[in-house]
Length: 578
Image (cartoon, rainbow, N blue to C red; front, side, top):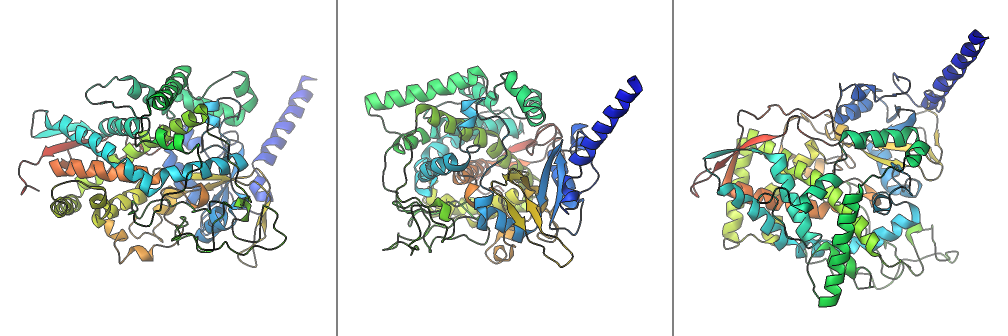
């Protein structure tokens, strides 16, 4: 009897495994070797691959295909590799792929489930429309002085230390700097995390962004495999101390500003203003933050749509229109508040009704803003510093541009001066090409979609609602067919002559389409300000602890240097020193 039970159980398990891991094959999509239970992630789980290695492996395992199938544990993922198909999914047919994968159940942690990144459908559209005016170039410009102050504090801290060459773990230094920038420019709190390394804001910020910790990894795995168990254990993505701290900061800040009439150029103030229906500030005379910026869709105030003049550039980023046209685009008589006869017709509202932001909503957005900007922007600064340290000719040329810019603007660092620096933008753009903040991004099929066959031998692929899509940014950015000699750091790829040759939808450091990163301007500006100040006073050089070539850590989801990123900061004693 026992043998019969074991035999039946073996057959059931075998059937389940075969059915689960043949999902893509049944749809006519190529897939590679799969390890049951672990899927394609087994080498990463065993510590053999970093997350970036996994993305590259998935990208190349079915060569010659525009898309292929893989599995994250038992969850099927479609890897989209073809730029034209990316354009359809992320932009043209975005209404079929409006959401991100649901990492945590919606009702587990409101501080997580209410933030813009994880909101879905109508809730996401409303929140995005409400927050977009907060992150325009003109609003980010208001925070410029706050960023400069924090960057100068960083330089002053190291300038006071003894020694001609200071050996510095750059990730720690830059993380403390980004913490201070976010605390000041987003929450209106002034801290100095280099002078006071254990200040409460830094400690809580560190806890809130510890997604790469073992406990957070376990949470994600449990939620992916057994969502009901995750819910029963009553786990929270953010700890009680983190939630209570940020909630208290927001509540006290809003209360104090209302009572005292305090106005400050920071994110909390802008979100408080977003509660009211105020006209958008004209962006025509404001310089944008660079080639890599993820531009927003400009929507009509009354109807919430983009006009025919509003479109997308060749890289899948929204374009600003000039001034609002005298009349709205023509709509058919069949339109009744929601229209599908124009691109992104689902965005149209006869009268856009957006709920007022609560303090909890503002706290949730502040937390995700911190979550996105604390570690990832510090990582961008680190990788840029590493490349400059090992490519001294590039660093010298950038420093010359910094000095020329200071001379042009009478020795003062200005917003216009920073953003007119072409070579600075080329260096940052190439850093994001080689070391993108997001190794991969995802989309969820929100309504059935068919990928048409590209050749007579192919079959149409019918995607059901709920199917997950992966866009392998790291692998595409390092594909030699798009970027020759991809492992070489070459800012000239982004000069005025060459950047027009970049194939559309192969450069996406901040994502694609309407769900691109809303904070890209903020991150780019603070990166340029910090690099400007550091290179003005220090030469970045390799030291004994510097690992060349850089090795990617296998224990994190984001790109991080294994063992930290150690560089030397060599004092520049005279203006003529380079």
